[in-house]
Image (cartoon, rainbow, N blue to C red; front, side, top):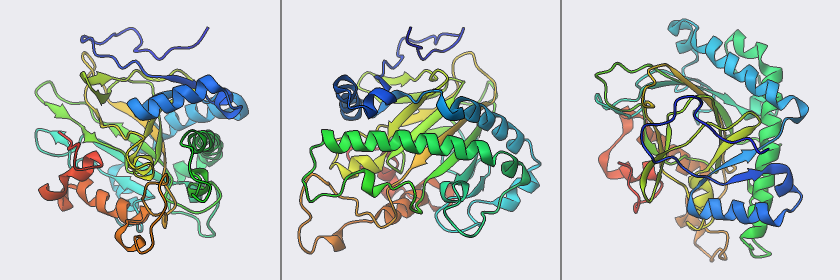
Length: 344
C-alpha cells in the first residue's frame, strides 16, 4: 500500500490541504510514462510534489541522523554558532549560521522567526581542496551528510533528465542536467532550519512568503507548518512519509523554461494547535554560477548575453531582498520571483 503524506493525529482545522502529485523516483528514472506525465503536470500547475526517493544505500538512516544533527547544532551556545556567521564566512552564503531575526519576515516586528545553518555541497562531497569551517558536531555527522547528499543529487538528476525530455528542448540547447552537474563546484547547500516557538500573542509568518532562489528544493520535516499558495488560497502541505521528500521548483527552473515551469509561493506559519519549535532541513540545488538565466526552449540570439543575468547574479540580487538590512520596497517583487506575482 502506498505510504501517504499525513498530519499525524492532529488534522488541520481548515479544509485547504494541498493535494499534490506523488511521484516514484525509480519509475521516473526507468522512463515511466505515467510518472513523467505526473511530473510535468506538477511542475506546470503546482510547483510542488512528493517524491519517493527510496530506502536504499542508507538514505533513511542518513536523513534521521540529520534530524539529530540539527538539534545538536542549534543547542550549541549562540556565541559558538556566531563564530560561523554565514555573512562573514565568504561569498554566496553557502556556509554558516544565520541567527534569528536577520531576514525580512512576516512576524509583527517585520523580522523572521527562524535560525538556519547552511552546509556547502562542495565541502560535504570533498569537491574543494580547502576544508570548510564548521563546528565539531558537523564533522561527526559528515558520513551521513555525504550519503544524504549523494542520494538527493541522484534523484535531482533523474528529474532534470526527465524534464529535459518532456520540455523537448532544441538539439543545440544545453540540457538541464548539464547545467546542474553534481561533480562540479556550484552553490548547492543543505540548509538546517529551526523555527522558534511563538507566543499566543504573536501573529504572522516566521518565514515570509517567497519562491526559492534555485532550481529544486528537497524538503524534509516531520512537523506541519508549510503552506503553498494555490488558486484557492493558502493550503497546508503535509509532511512526506519516510523515504520521500517534498520537492518544489524554484526561480531557476522557472527562468530556464521562460515561466513554463512554475516556481510557487510558499511560507511557514504556526500550525493550528501546535506551539512547539519546528525543525526541518532542505537540500537546495542551484544552476552553476555562470549559467545564463534564459528560456532554453528558444535560441540564444546574438548579442543578448549582455542583457541576461547569470545564476550567481540572480542569487546575489535576491539575497539582498531577503536580508532585512538590505531590503527595499522597489525590489520586493524578487521575493516572488517575478513582477507579476508579488509576495504578500
